Image 1 (tube, rainbow, N blue to C red):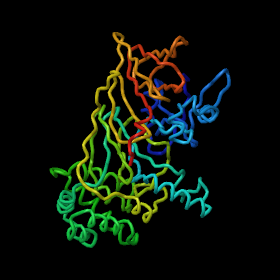
Image 2: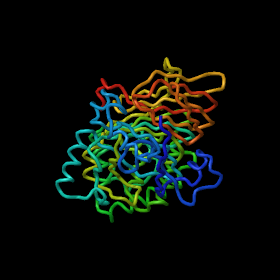
Image 3: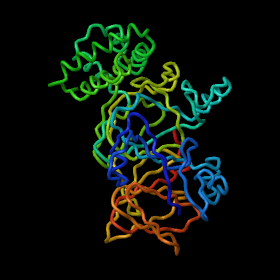
Image 4: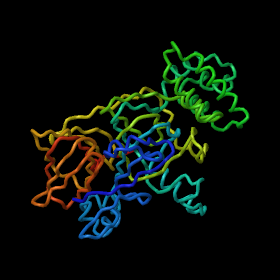
Length: 405
């Protein structure tokens, strides 16, 4: 087992207090702290010390992939750790975005490489050849936009705004209240000239402010109005009103497969995903937006999104079920009266999010873990036991027999 030193990403939408509070730091950060990364992604790999030598988790795995990952996972994922674990702290909303499927990521990565677009270029869409299904489990109350709302409800929402200037945009949706009409409306929104879109955004924001009070879509309209103050003229503001607003209580989760248009709005959560950083943005961001490529990967199926509740496992932890082959996330509440001793599942990342825990593997020295700290457990490490008083998130690989996406 290795105690990890992890990178905090200072994206502008991050919180100055949430990750600091999780890690027990007495003062806020001088700047935003958006994501705490735990894993072996090339952009920000975790670090560890072995035999007195500092190295990255990538280097440790590359030196002996079968020992660190186990032969099955090493073979299935090309000798790489298949999942990336994060703590995400959104003080302000993230961009409207989606992630590609595995086939789309492989094709897009190869295409942009052939075009000679540097990996660090701002207009680069595909940073790697992997897909990025992801699961977010709320640590605090968490607001997110996730997937396209039932078309009938969306038509009712825009009807309640009373904005006749939107008729050219909404005409396809009203004529064909299904995925086909939704796609055409979204395509018009994303590809019309900026001088045509800007008045739509301003008028929708004004109507949202005027009509939110008493509306059954109050929270959706309030978020659209807030986003317009952050990103005036951005078509993503109107795009958010096509999506489900999901409010997670602590302990609830959402799963985002390929093609799901979404945006995290506010809150703190533990996030696990395939080991990728591929993002296609659709608005509410100063970063690169490639509307044709986004349209190519989006899934326009509609319907409500139900939060995922964990299921009790035979090990005594609570597992968040998903179809992902790359990852499995569970949570264990450990008290002084019990010991958490799960069956091993290959390589693991263990994250303490509350309290203090002691982890003992075999007859080795125990590791003491406080809130905000994490551990890498190699596939070759013996079974471990967790004692103390705290909450532990456990990241492992998923079911390799799963079809994935």
